[in-house]
Length: 464
Image (cartoon, rainbow, N blue to C red; front, side, top):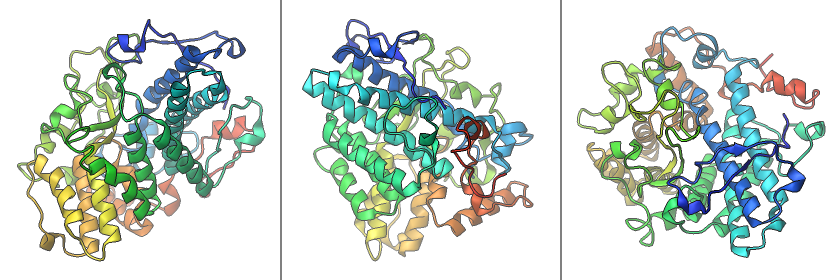
């Protein structure tokens, strides 16, 4: 794992001069010591961090959507089937690819922080720090949920600094994530000019920090981050649900008020397109990863999300269609944080805090359902805290299909509940003999990385 990596992006005359500020390709063969000399050059490093996110989110579905109970597949072989059917091992290429792309981008973030003192504009310096710490936190949140204990790298290191490759406890990783996100909340602006709308905002940092607190069951802290986002200063002004659910994912109407943070892609733009749009299609590599029959049955007949999530005739994903784009070079952005997520997180934390469900649970939950043309709940139908919790998780399944959320939701549930759900799903989809031991709720550490670390990086228990 060579974490001391330098990739810079050439800026156009102004960052605001292009539709998407990630239009430019990385430039190689630049020597680190002779670059990052001033504010503009450090800013190219910041953009390189966003470029790294493109690479990570282009393949995240291979570890999340494939493994969750929203999807099923027939004749899945090789690395696809190994993940789908809980037999993945340390030689699985998808696991290595995601690990390397993530740590490559973390290295870019650390390199920006290393040279942050060369930024002479105090406002930009503050923004840059907030942006890259958000990106680093997002990557570490995904890594720790997928692999468990991982190396915690907060500064640039040499490729042969093997001692730094040791795994650090999840507790320490989460502590660093929270520290970084609190800095992002303080440093990032409330908004950016339209041409730079992809960049991290204060609200995005608050939403991600709330998700971290929610994952750790620190509900009061999560609620404190979410409340401003649904308050009068933001709701309906900065953020709101898009009245048209399908429009959220269309290349013609991206970055609406529903989007809190998205990884942006652009078709036919010097390699800035995504491949997952094509991979989910009939001709793509993931064409056998489809909405499972049990998942399809969860939708009410009038729920508009059904047709916008999958094709009822074949189960294929319909969320990220860009039919005019070249193969593996589509322009659909990937929504990481949506306002619907903010509302459902708020409903969930309110439910966990209150002794019984009240309007703070009911109203945001119903707001999401009403937009989808699904039937509304009342306090009687929510019933107990436990029943309301189940309904909120169900709503998250309906709302975020093929958005890589379901696996992360599963692994933050009670472990026994998660295993029970997965075993029931496997049985319903014709695989009742497949076992789901607790250790398989995280992935093995890639063997290539263990070898490169000279044994400093160790394997997760249960995996050979």
